[in-house]
Amino acid sequence: MPKSFSDRIIVWQREHGRHGLPWQATRDPYRVWLSEIMLQQTQVTTVLDYYPRFLVRFRDVATLAAAPEGDVMGLWSGLGYYSRARNLHRCAKEVVSRFGGYFPPSAELLETLPGIGRSTAAAIAAFCFGERAAILDGNVKRVLTRYLGVADDLAVSAHERMLWQRAEGLLPVARPRENMPIYTQGLMDLGATVCTLRRPTCLVCPLSSDCEAKREGEPERYPVKTRRLKRSRLDLWLLHAVNSEGHVWLAPRPAPGIWAGLHCLPTFDSREELMASLPSEARERSSEHPPFVHVLTHRDLHLHVVTASGVDSLFRAGADQTGGWFGQPQWDVLGLPAPVRRFLESSLNSPPVPDAAAG
Image 1 (cartoon, rainbow, N blue to C red):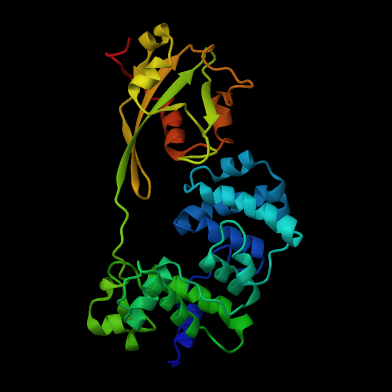
Image 2 (image 1 turned 30 degrees about the horizontal axis):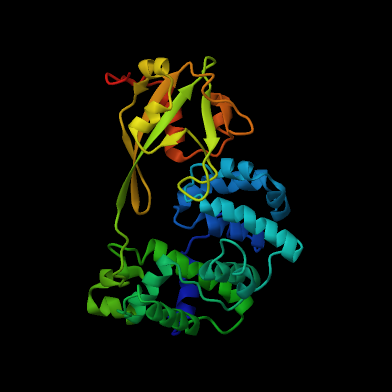
């Protein structure tokens, strides 16, 4: 067994790591960058569906930069964390305007682009240019804190800076252009498949012989991060306005805020506010759907939808109003929040519950 940390990671990745992912067989910075952004807080299985469709529609960074933002948001719809899509588009524009359509070949410059943080910049630089740059995403923090026995609270910025320094000290020295992509992928793979959050399989880990967490017998204690954001609840009332042709009114959400830039049903803070927006005859015909919950990272959205039919005159696209009437075939190309898309699709088959309180 090779002695150094990096040697063990490289050997393990070659023999046991993941090799069939579509973004692994390339050093094209555009494709690597796209995969890294998509993989932030998103499962690999989900990204495997979106990644090829993005490449078909936006074959390179120049094509992405030239596309309307609505096209980008529409193709991203369902991936969540929509600020990633907006930053993706902004980043493509800056790569074209600042760097002539070529991603800069260093982590330091990559980090100056929208949506690219320190770890993502390092990953792109390591995979594409062989730069000796350390990554430190959630999986890698877990591997390193367990291996090194770092029990410092990573919610303290000074402790996280120290972990960055130790991560840099573990980087391979020899043949970086060859070894850095394998080493970086190996750390990611080890955290995703072996050194998992719960029930890590230490028996097959290449680092187990001198892993401090394994020696202590409590690997799940690491990493330590005490600061936790409290979950909150937000109730939103959505108006499902349907015109005489069966089309639904959808309009872009304002920025900043939840679902900024995505097309959405008109949104209200209360049932009373929603009902007050309707003419009296529309209120009498309105129907309320059972509420449902959509879970965000630190917030639970309690969504209440009211359907009002035959309200053609209520909304008109014009100088003072954005949005329009959209039929079912058009929903697929719009950027819609995932719960709104699910509701619209289910509403085709599930009638609403009559609203006894309407009027």
